[in-house]
Amino acid sequence: MPDPWPTAITNIKPNSVRVRGYDIAELMGRCSFGQMVYLLLLGEPPDAPTGRLMEAILVSSVDHGATPPSALAARTVASTGASLSASVAAGVMSINRHHGGAIEACAHTLGEVVEKARFGKTLDEASDDVIGGYKKRGERIAGFGHRVHTADPRTRRLFELAAEAGVGNTPDTEPSHVDAARALERAFARAGKPLPINVDGAIGAILADLGFDHATMNGIFMIARAPGLVAHVVEEQHRMKPMRKIDPASHTYDGPADRTAPNQE
Ligand SMILES: CC(C)(COP(=O)(O)OP(=O)(O)OC[C@H]1O[C@@H](n2cnc3c(N)ncnc32)[C@H](O)[C@@H]1OP(=O)(O)O)[C@@H](O)C(=O)NCCC(=O)NCCS
Image (cartoon, rainbow, N blue to C red):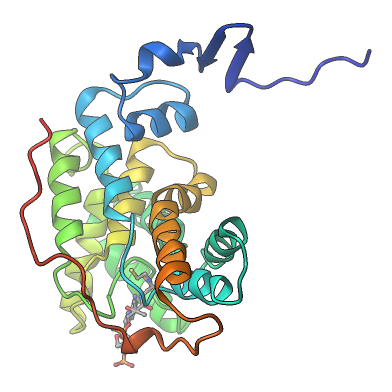
């Protein structure tokens, strides 16, 4: 028998399933999906406010209507008669550098600002430098600007929950990615081009401050968006004619009218 290969994620034995050492039956009903994703990817469970923050990140990205490329790709493939798995996979395959990828790319840029601020510059000076560099190269800074929203409600709520979890807001100690995001927002305004931090930028900042590896950040977006893609594919299969010409912009919403979320506490 060859030497066994190592895995540190889940230990399966007869009548026992332990994820990162924890009995899955003990976690079930006590641990939220966000806490579980955090445990799975970082190896240790989050404290309660960080678990709520992680849960909010997943909820914030669950769907953004019929126009994002992943929904369009999933619906287009579904309309050809493809299976649920093939259609959802098509949606996931369109989550890349320019869709969902702004999370990782923004975390990288915020890292540049944080690095400069560690070596003597203020966050504002570091942000001006970084924006100047991107402008010179003719590149956009991922995580800023939005096609639809000028004050994205998801961003504000994520930063509120981040503050409750003690993430960011440490300008007097170690510069954080959340503070760097706010400093870049101020720098865009100073440069005469006020661009809001978008939801991807907020998530990139928070995940970087929580210590997530850049390589897992697009994966967190995929985990969050998978339920939305399943919903789009199932709706396409049940409500629409096969092989229709899909114009993403010419849809109309006919779901429930606005209502208040039930209190789950
Ligand atoms: C999301 C995005 C495509 C929306 O773009 P838009 O509102 O249609 O804006 P436009 O592409 O028309 O750009 C308007 C101006 O703002 C500038 N701009 C927009 N977003 C910018 C950014 N992130 N960094 C630098 N400049 C930006 C453009 O260069 C353009 O400048 P100009 O008028 O001098 O030519 C754009 O803001 C962007 O590329 N953002 C970065 C990628 C990102 O975060 N994607 C995730 C979205 S949730």
